[in-house]
Amino acid sequence: MIKCVYPGSFDPVTSGHLDVITRAAAMFDNIIVAVLVNKNKTPAFSVEQRMDFIRRSTAHLPGVQVDSFSGLLVDYMKRQNANLVIRGLRALSDFEYEFQMAAMNAKLAKDVETIFLMTDINHSFLSSSMVKELAYHGGDISGLVPDQIKNDVMNKYRG
Image (cartoon, rainbow, N blue to C red; front, top):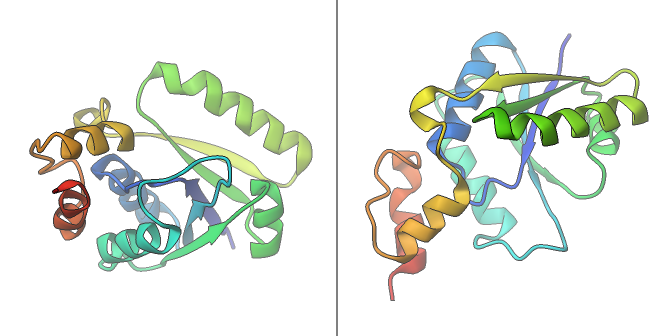
């Protein structure tokens, strides 16, 4: 059985992330969306909030679980008995970094494979940073984040 992990910071989860999760869920029976806890970064949303956002946004998708981890992805993969990493690509500029990460993961854990899914072209410009910047300035984030979390994101920045 293939067990997949889609890791990321998801601060917050965007429509691009949801596109990748939805398409991966159609290909694989069991996907863990794993929120990275990076002690070197200060996220806008707590890990609990980010996990809640993902759970609410993926409730309609069978086989999708949400978890969090810190440390090396390959160590988390071993703990989960997972063997496939899913990574989303928005543009060619993402590929070089993602390819380096996939190569390092393959060196550290020979049984871990990485697949890349291109984000739908309608989301190729989208990032969590852009969503936060737009929300901070009171812009309309409709369609940029799942409908289930839009108000939560906007409320974070209303003063």
